[in-house]
Length: 149
Length: 63
Image 1 (cartoon, rainbow over the protein chains, first blue to last red):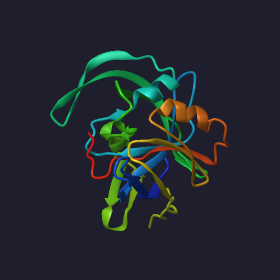
Image 2 (image 1 turned 90 degrees about the vertical axis):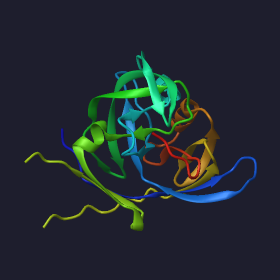
Image 3 (image 1 turned 45 degrees about the vertical axis):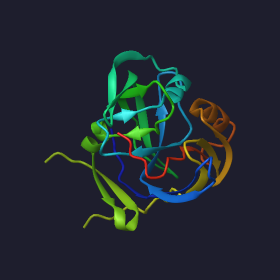
Image 4 (image 1 turned 120 degrees about the vertical axis):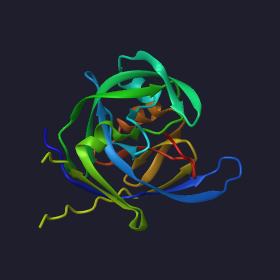
């Protein structure tokens, strides 16, 4: 498996509150990627790169789109509360604009019972496979494949 | 010295908090609470032009 090196600018999002119509400008470390099951793959999606997440989190709607086989698992602990969840496995290919890595296969993912969460790339496996540096002051981040010494 | 790869721009987008979006060449063409619906809509566009993304709640913290 060949992992490419990536450098990304944070994504700028102008988030509008549905009730007040107030706009807030925010910047997030979003990684373009595509997800694949044994039968189907997604278009390019943007996933939040999150060192605070133990692993990959896939919203239920995406799991259903991919026809993932879901197994009931213990609830996720989210800021002091429990969220019912399932687990499954899939492949993820990072990149876009002509720059891709090989698919990272057999990733175990958590699938909460709702679509409220974003697609999240957490520490397992991404922070094991890559040295990841957030340069918050410049709103960019770098992913360099980790090479065992 | 390692040559750095060129930086990839992820651009900008405007939308209602919490919504999933289909973005084609930087323009939002669909919006929904349902990501599966947005992935189905995205199938109609050339893969190199389309992205499915989510408008996060500002100042939110996730896992």
